[in-house]
Amino acid sequence: MNLFDRLPLGIFGPLTGRNSRRAWELLNRLSVRYFGPACVPPFPEGYLLEQIVKEVERFLVEHDWEEEESPATTLSGRAAALVARLAETGWLVKEVVGMRTFVSMRPTVMRLFETLLAFATERPQHVGGSIQLIFSQLQSVQKDPRGQAAGFNTAAQLCSKLIASLNATTMRARDLIKDLLQENSTPSFICRFFTEHIGEMYVQDFQQLRTENHPLSLRFEIINIVWQITHDEVQRSSLIDGYVMALNLQRDKAEAALDEDVERFRRLLDVEQFLDRMDSVIEGATQRALNVINYRLKASDRLEFIIDDTMDALSEAEEGDVEVQGAWSRVLPAIAECRLQFPHPAPPKPQRKPMIKPQLSVRDRAMHELRRAMIASRDMSTAAARNYVERVLAEGETLDASTMPISGVRDAVAYLVLLRLASQKKISLSNPRAKQLGFDVKLSGLNGGVADTALFRTSNFMVSREANDAA
Image (tube, rainbow, N blue to C red; front, top):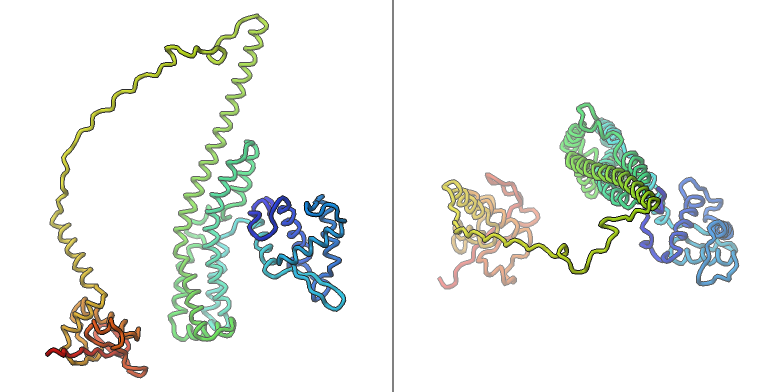
């Protein structure tokens, strides 16, 4: 399939109208011949304007492209105007150096055409090969985390590309079936089904994905290696140092980038879901296409036979001077008994049944009460924290976080709520909502230490209950 058959024309800017397809073909030609990855410009600034204009002139002659705005303009003038239009709209860049004008293509536009070309010429991927590359790279990272940090990042990105490719394959299969159903010719439908749908769509090793010796089974070992590297303090520190050197990041940003790459590796655990989805789409799309082929073949054969028999019968009747009679050849009267509609039978009378209120069993009632108790025990509102403070603190007293009693789930949840309020640094006497709480909670400063309890190890904070003025 051509690149422009897959390209939604008219969504990338001002190149719209009747000549939008020609404009895309011109941009693609300039990208391939002058601004592609294999092209080396003769000057550091790019190509001379005259060279690009001559190429546009050749394109206009080959495709017989005429502008509606100025049909009487000369060929060179139309080519120069078209290059100027592409430069004004941002597709090309014109730069004047001395007495000469150079033309180049913007990096974003070059990347766009590379991506579109790669999408149009993409072949079915080999999942086993990608998994094997990831596994081999992680083995190297495990031996030298600092030196192979860039390889760890590349392997993580390859995991994301693998998952995205499986998801894109599923969506492309759906779109392709919809496109195939628009084919009116049965031979074209069959040819496109076996070439595009079967030969160019799915992964190459799809039949071996579920086998035990397929490299996809290494995904659990990959996750295990990633866990060992990132949870060992020495290897993790070396890997972060490698991220700082290879990716030119600060240490805190390198740690965040490492955590993101770990999440990319963990997505390999969801491969099974994507494969099940692909199985369903392949089965449905293939069955739908086969039904269409079967229907078209049978319908076409039967229709041709009926037409041939009808033509032979009409020819014989005409030669024998026989009047042809049939339901299709005679006109029925406008008012006749055969045109009357049969009466509709009366619908059966519905049988009304009394409503029965469902009765919960003893087990269902017990589970209901248990869920209510669980929800009440995990109440994280400020009201629950206030009840906890009033229960463990007397008026006017102050309590340290490490000495707070925790005797159950409610107390543990209230402890976490107080820690959250202290971390927000918004609880003060000037806050109207804070006055309604009846207590003040705050962290013990930057060097306040750590509070060790039976369940938690958190930053230390203080809780002070206000004294009742009325008392």
